[in-house]
Length: 189
Image (cartoon, rainbow, N blue to C red):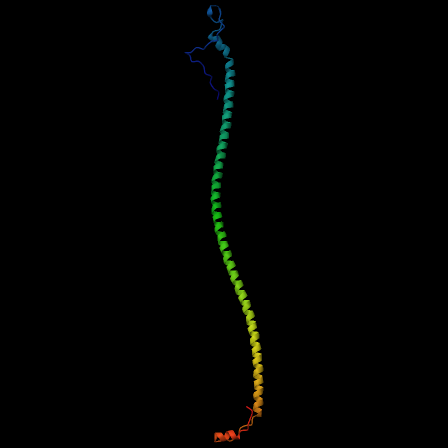
């Protein structure tokens, strides 16, 4: 939209250039009408210049408005990113806390597992020792059983020998115990 040039109102007079005065102090043939006529061809040029200037200013204003809108959009985007960052940091803090708790639980579990493993190793060592002791006890028992069998076998043999050397008792039992001793043959007891 072209700018309207400021014109003097009807009650105001336009100042004429000084210096060109004719004889008697009047201007040499220049009247207000002539000045207007002289300026009339200049007015369209001035109007065109003003219109170009207005269009240039409008373009600058639109460019600046577009830049400011882009900057506002950028700032809104940055605000959104900051909010997302805050949210992400909160989630990260929560995740780190959860991770820390999980690590603590894992450490506790690992310690408990090591304690259990150590107990299991101790129990296994005890079992191995008891197995060794059991084997030794079995071996000793087997040796003692073998020795006892040999002794019993020998005792049985000795008893058999003793029995074979003994005379069988009489068919009639003596009525007198003293006489029974006299009838028995002497044996090595």
